[in-house]
Image (cartoon, rainbow, N blue to C red):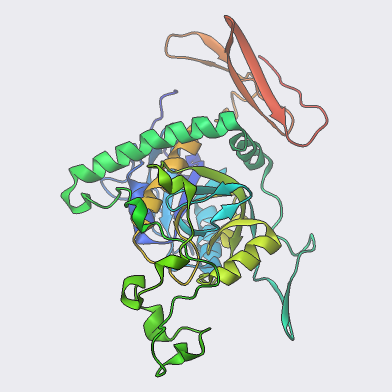
Length: 397
């Protein structure tokens, strides 16, 4: 890994991490390897930028971290536009935090603590309300658009078994480091451990979290929950355990898994199992969150979020800390797999010296593909993929 020196200007920062909640920010802070602002901010910000930044290093990248003042797409869009005005050299923004998950994705199960990575973001609340139905605008002009090429290349690798295994292995190591560091700080001692499997509870989608033995509130008609019920726990309401769905992955002691797919983004929290299933089916979603659509059009971005609930009326906060930690772990592991771009003065050579002085080729690609290298039977081999078809040329200096 090349030596990373302290940046002299804001333009030298290539990576941004965006968090919407303080608990997401706290988890993200724990994956930084070094901070550049320990003695106060030295980089400033552009005129008109109201954001407050934390700067440092994660692996080989200089990273700027911003905590949004509010949740939602409007807040994230404004903050990201300001971020881009101050940090003009950004290549990638990672939106790290927590989300609601779709429990069934094809033949796979998503359980609490798993991490989702965006292949694309769907703004499913953008459209027209007709009598009896809502029609989402889905024309080319109305959609958020495709991710940037280098983002698509990176995410495509994580859709392969090999790429996802390497990402997961790295994230498991980072999570252990987060938990160890949190344990060393007494104020964080118990925050990032995995809750017991018995607290991962998925009810039937049609089973609403509500009072069932009263005629004195809005729960009486059997379809809508009153405000008191919405603020009560499943234990307080005695939700029927017979309506819980069996989850095969919980039969063992599972590690978190990683899923890549379409993530829904909206300014409202999904707290309905019925609506979750309808939206997931209509748009092919694997998770729901509230900031991705605001960031997507401002900076090339990837949403990396840990599943803390099932986006139903039974949701609670028990898994939020662990989910924030798994998301931060995958975020750092993802950055470790993100190919570094040569500086402008070196871009033509594709060559750099390692610590021992040997010259190696970075094999830059002139097409929309990703490139890796390794050894097979004693031979140095470069291999890659092309996500758009056609021809990709790899130049070796």
